[in-house]
Length: 487
Image (cartoon, rainbow, N blue to C red; front, side, top):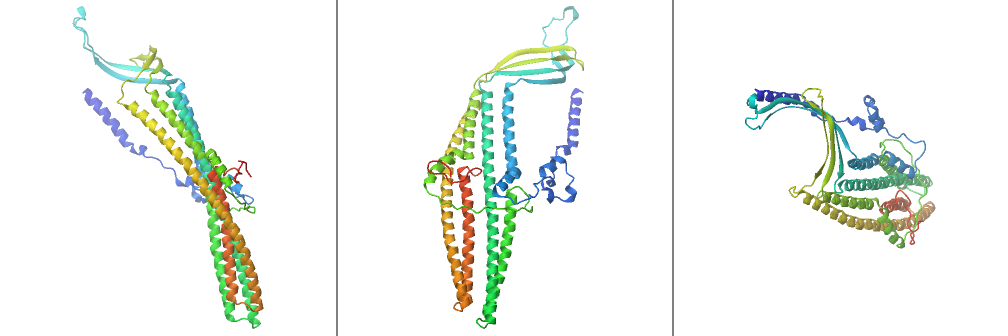
């Protein structure tokens, strides 16, 4: 009968849990909660305030944004930057969690059980009262009270855990700093890409204006009998081609603007205006490279994070060693215990316990060896990271030198092409050059101006990569002098 009753209770509990299976299905959030405010459908505007606050976007600014302004917006609004800040906050909470081991643990406990046990009593113990029962119970056992414990000694495990948590916090901060520099680099690239596209649009409009001028000139010469209809037709084809080029470049400007918005954490369709000062093109030399190597290994957040991970791995080794030592804990309990629902009899205890594991199936040994291997791995990865950082500095320096020389060459190319264009136009007006010569000179000038625009903005992007390689993109990205000072 007793086992039937127990089986029935268990079946009832299983049926209850099975009947509420839908309570164990995860509740996914709505994707509308993560859309930018202006991108939502009107029916989705009534979101809870917390979701709405997480989905708002920065409104359009009153004036054009410079590069620094775009970077500030990105660091504030880019979701990845927000995620990194939350990661740092989580690591900070982990430090507080590690400190909790030094505080007493206090809690309430309550319980109920019904029990029956065999009583091992000597024969004849009952005397005149007869043979005593060989079982005790069944009885109800109700208990409740306050339980407290405090670890007095743990062979250094708590200290090692706190140090490990602090190093993880340091690594998280440096990783957040590295992510901010990556975001800033993306903004630099998108910003310069947009300005480059705008400059290309300006060049395309200038080319269209020149083509229209050539068409006008060809018509005037034809009317004067100094040119043929073929010259007019060729000039008309050139005008149509330049208009088509403007359509293509306008599309590139639109795409570049969307890329910059996305890099800043804004919707691609949000209207923004950017401004830029005249770019400064300065030469570089190899004497700055040696100083840059030293600055990079001390500035790069990735290396600082690696050092924190090494320190954390050492703390993990110390924590693993503590498992071989004893642990001492003070424990206390005060409450009530009785056979009734509201127990009346006091029940308390206080004492100190010491524990020293002797054999755990080699678990502690394997844990210690694993921690030591993890430390060795972090050491090796850090050495490799130093080599990678130095290679990045070397490559960035070479790209800046290449881009600077390309700008100088493109500047001369544009000057020569403009002079050739001027002379060819004069010759065409004088009748000593053909329309083919004029359009060839126009094509050469257009190509030279496009090369100059690309070289100029490639130089600025290479300077941004230089700042990222040396870990100074959010600060001064100028090249260091040989004595270690900054320009």
